[in-house]
Amino acid sequence: MGIFSKFKKGFQQGAGALQGTLLRITGRDKLDADDLAQLEEAFFAADFGLETTEEILSEIENAFRKDKNFKGKDAAAVAREVLFRNLKGAEGKFEIAGNGNPEVLCMIGVNGAGKTTTCAKLGHLLQANGKKVLLGACDTFRAAATEQLRAWSERLKLECVFGHHGADSAAVAFDAYTAAAARSSDLVIIDTAGRLHVKDNLMDELFKMKRVLGKKDELAPHHSWLVVDGSTGTNGLEQAKVFNEKFGLTGLVVTKLDGSSKGGVLVAIYRELKLPIYYLGLGESPDDLQPFLIEYYLESILPQGESVAA
Image 1: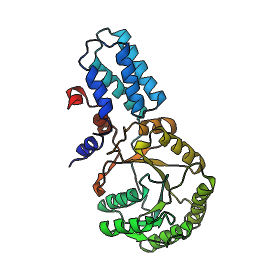
Image 2: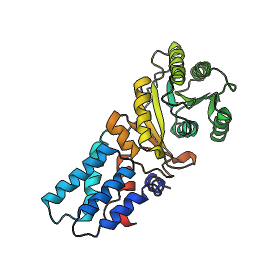
Image 3: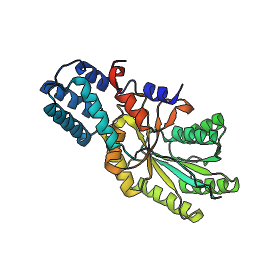
Image 4: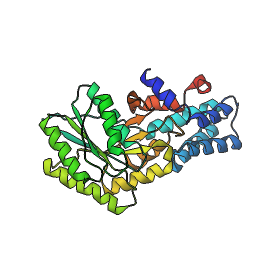
């Protein structure tokens, strides 16, 4: 299956309601107040956030006032343009310097966001592209988290450093970096324990991990990505704001977009924080973690022309 097919399939369920609303009005010769209200509700329900939704509706209304022949199908084109403008610069291009020392990427987020599987899938993707990757199983608190990452690493033939249940996560991260340096790895991907962004004591554990890694490399972690469950809606934006303020984020991965997610939360987060979006989780298989591409994203949630009805 091609990359675009993965995008389209991934958003098929979540974007259906928005596409259905657009489909209902595409044949209208003119838009009325009820049509605009339906569009506003649909975009807001799709998790684009208040500001983006208001911008879309404002531009649709302005276009309608300027052209009384403005039709329903034109509304989707206006929305695409607004979203494209808001996502300008959002495509994260992940590059590893390759200066002889391993770089460190910490996966951060709340419980259930999909950090562990994302770590394994990303390792698999990078390894397929010629990078030498080592995983650090630093979620030592969640039941079976280490076993889950072990199973993934064995399945995908990835090197991984483990600690026992309840071990100090910073110590495991230290050992993972040491092993990566000894094995000439390009990247260490750290699977951190899920933590609520409002719990200061749990956030302190991340700071400790950063301090310990800094003893190995003062720039570590080189990358700190927030993994957000795409179905969490506007709560995902609140998570991103707090984690970014307290820990400092360098990027974003949005997961579980093949379920009930509407897909709009990534626009809301990027608009607010300008964090590059590196990857999207579009399914359960290892190859369903895909680089974020604006054009594929927009075409999946707001297909142009007749493809809206497809």
